[in-house]
Image (cartoon, rainbow, N blue to C red; front, side, top):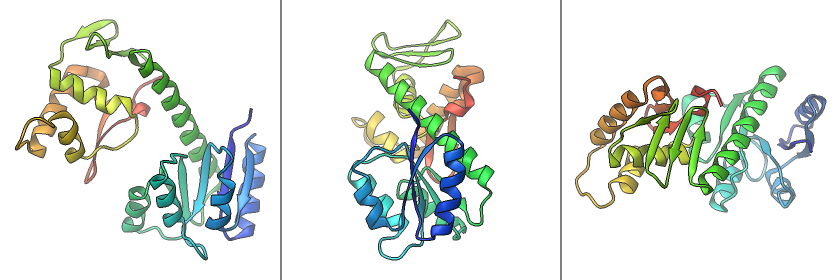
Length: 233
């Protein structure tokens, strides 16, 4: 079944262009011309939302914020003429997955759409593996029951804290966790832990993971994430 995409933009010309090109790529596409209309359509399942920021009525940012507060995690790519760093940071802070500035290249939009949908499907597959007691990324196997890390078939000895850090990041691939979030989860019983402590443990974990250490990425100003793009899945 074709992946279903919702385009939300009050510019009908943009909607028509995107709908035409994405349909040619094999996607099932629907359009909404306001945030209010889009929220009504979301009773149906969509794989992705292309969301304009500046619209009459509810803005794209407000719509995204509402979806995340309602625990709706449909991937969102913002489309906007606002392209300052602060605008981009706002987009990510309200739950956006990507950000494309107008005017945009259709080829760029299609490439970003494909990447987000592929990443989402990969994440869903990994969440199923978690339920079976393992997290697997190519030659990386995290055994949640045995508390072991296997890389290329070799058992990598980790401390309890290192294993908990790796598991925390790998269970939610591509989601950024702040140092404060990590401290609250991993060191919840230990007072007076500093952000520098997180950095030191991450550095040791990366070193032990060898060539796969680059999968743990630092997003400056935000925190850490497990980047599946660094691993051939």
